[in-house]
Image 1 (cartoon, rainbow over the protein chains, first blue to last red):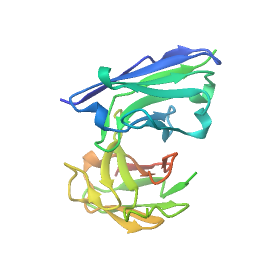
Image 2 (cartoon, rainbow over the protein chains, first blue to last red; image 1 turned 90 degrees about the vertical axis):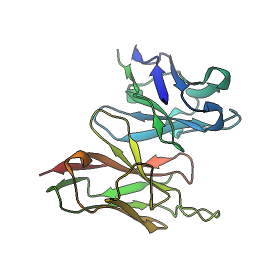
Image 3 (cartoon, rainbow over the protein chains, first blue to last red; image 1 turned 180 degrees about the horizontal axis):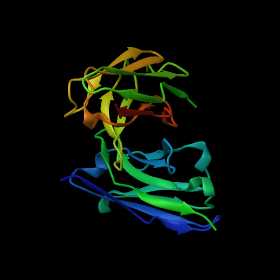
Length: 114
Length: 112
């Protein structure tokens, strides 16, 4: 059974940091580009970042460039998102996904508030 | 960035009736490899999105044949031939020809 399980969300103050994790099982994680997509409360979907299977290529939406870092550990079947200098507008549910195969996690909520 | 514009933003449909959603992109999604990198997703309440249509007109595995996609270049349409109660949710178009990938604003489908 395919599973993607996000963790690491929570309440953080503006300017703070969080590291999200996505642990994957049930398919060959190392073969696929993996993506973070977020959804602010009551809003639409926003693509955040993706990473190549071997980790050699990464892309980000402009609003998070320089603040967020996507990474992966294929040996641990895990995807990460290091989020620094968090802002109120980063408040969202963060999903990890492999878009090619349409595998999605259930999401983890990040709330940036004082 | 490529802007994806969906219309309408909401839709109320009687079960058994058809529905149609349009999505326009600010630039062509046709790649030189011949593929058009355009997708339709449905997000049911309380769930992550699920892929319905990939590369304009290909139904993803398990998607009922009442869903169909069409279009080319910058103009795309999702049609539901006969809406069922389980089709409620928010429909999103997405492009992946250029990073950042971008989604439309979403179209909320409700049942009358």
